Image (cartoon, each protein chain N blue to C red):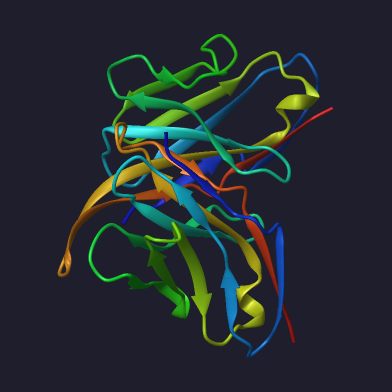
Length: 114
Length: 120
C-alpha cells in the first residue's frame, strides 16, 4: 500500500528565511510523489512532482523538493519565504496499481510572518 | 491544463436534506474524481466517475449516500444524501490529464475550488 506522512501540523517561519515542509513516504515500488498547495477558499494547486530523474525537483512559485530514497523523504523547500506562501500544503503519492488514485498526507499549515 | 468550476461554492443545509454539487470542466476527460476534505483533515477519495458507466466507490462510501452522475465528458454531479452534521466538509472534484510538455509527458491531476458544506 502507498501512503505519505506529514509529521508537522504547522510550520512557522519568518519572511525571508528558508522554509522546509516535511513529507515521508511508504510505497511498494518506485514512488510518484507530488506537492499541492491550498489557499483559503481555493482548490488544490499543483506545485511539483517527482517521477524519475533528478532528485531535486523544481516547481512553481520558487518551490523545490528533494527526493531522498534512503530516508524515504520528499521535503518541500524554498530558499526565501514570502508572506504570500502562507497556505496549507499537501504531500501526495499516486497509487501504483490504480494510477488515478492519490493518497494525501494530513497537510501542513505554513505560516510566514512578516 | 484544465479549468474546473464547482457549484455551489458553499451551502448551509439542514439535517436530513440532500445537496447536489456540480462540477464542470473546460475540456473532455474520461475520469472525474470526487474527494472529501473534512475539517482539519486531508483529502479522501470518495469515488471515480467514468462517463457512460457507474461510479466506482472507495471503501467507506456507498452509492446510496453519495450518488454520482456523469452524463457527458465535461460534467459530473455528486449528491450528498440525507445529510448529517458529520457530512460537513469541503467536497472537491478533480480530473486527471495526460500532458505533453517539452521535458516529457506525464499525468497531472487538477482540482476544482471545492464546495464548502455545513450541515446543521
